[in-house]
Length: 303
Image (cartoon, rainbow, N blue to C red; front, top):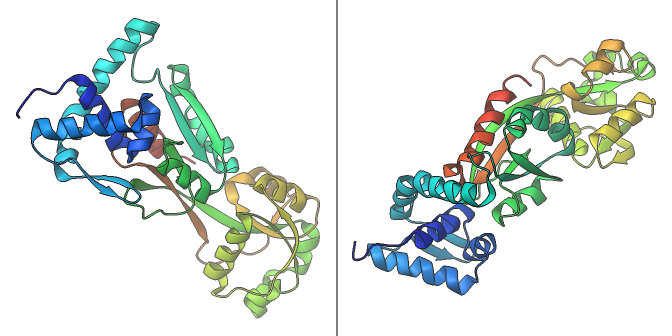
């Protein structure tokens, strides 16, 4: 090493490494992009090796950057926590804000209750609800820290881990159960759903297609009568008897138990929808994000 880099250079390096972009790092640090670029170049000069490859979509860490981040992240974070604690009177890795994104239904019913204990320990959570595509874009741009997604992203800037599988069920009220009998499905397969009134959501439509593809191997001609941009709206419409639909089992467990909704079809292999946990590559060196990530993976086993 030609000269000893100061803490600001290392802090800036980590911000760029974790966010995957100079502009995003500058926004997080409250600096101009030229200032961030200058600090990265100064650190590269100090250690005598390039740390990032510049691309049209941001920057990618070199092998030297990966090793450096592993070596310094915990130490730099610990120093920053000490400084923050001195200034604010707060301390600990959980005295931070996590920007979390996910689908409305799972986030409300499963994710947030699973993080309640961390909130009691001082963690703050800012939640954004939306579609997988929009949330993953927000993650790469630095607006989110952790995203629960039904889409597996192959973006090299992201680290994606399987979180859980949702059991998908085709349901309706008693009136629909009398029409869509097991015998009808046994005789006609997917054709049994042809021209039947269907209730879907923006994500529910893909769930219905997924169910039919996995359960029947084919997508029948469907007559969509109601489209609701929230699966909770789909469920309330199904309860009113407007049609049939496919939803995750956990959202309607109580309705199946009390008979207000009936499972209309039981395939040999239950169709599932896999959900994923996505973070920016390298960001789990931050203790508060690592804690939330680990907690969700553990709690998801119980969902």
